[in-house]
Length: 248
Image 1 (cartoon, helix red, strand yellow):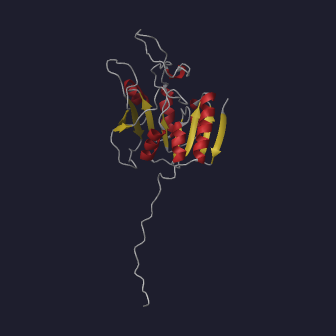
Image 2: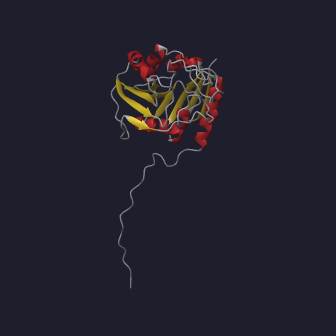
Image 3: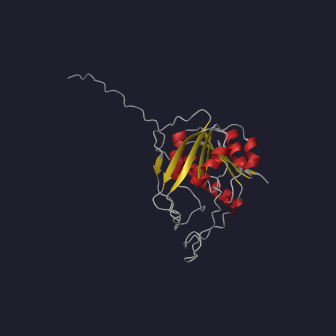
């Protein structure tokens, strides 16, 4: 059953399946999303030295059953909703995502993390990819390079979502694309929405899991009350000095 929450003018969240909701939204400026990667990412649990994924942190999150496959319909629906799509993914899935996306791939950004996030296979990864697809090309609002150095949220700290992204990373991406309205059809705990509303952008989010939908509602509502007042401000140049006449 679909649920809709309007948190403010221009900020609407939907609880439901994005495959059902996306066709009802019409055209949006840009999709910025961190969808399931299709890598069967299980919860991190200590396994000793068995060769399985090890670690004793982040075990409070349930198994990532939603991350076991990439539905080709997702790419087509996102491309229908917006002419610009920023899509996070695992490097092994680039060909699959590019093949399924109706929009041309314009750029690949490498998110370089401050530590490795997996075991050697054959080398330990400390990066993630952001693929930028666009119908007419992308003219970035800010100057950027293809490698972004941004610390991750540590696995040993508490997070709203096991795969939660840093707000600073999402803010940087949104400022670069400079959309009027941001759409995230895989909203999770709402980090894209938090970043969007803090810098004054409209936001539409979709999440299928009620637990994360409620978390997103709380986080984005709080962000609406605490916007970043120092981002995207237009600074007026000082007025030229004027010489005044004084009577002696």
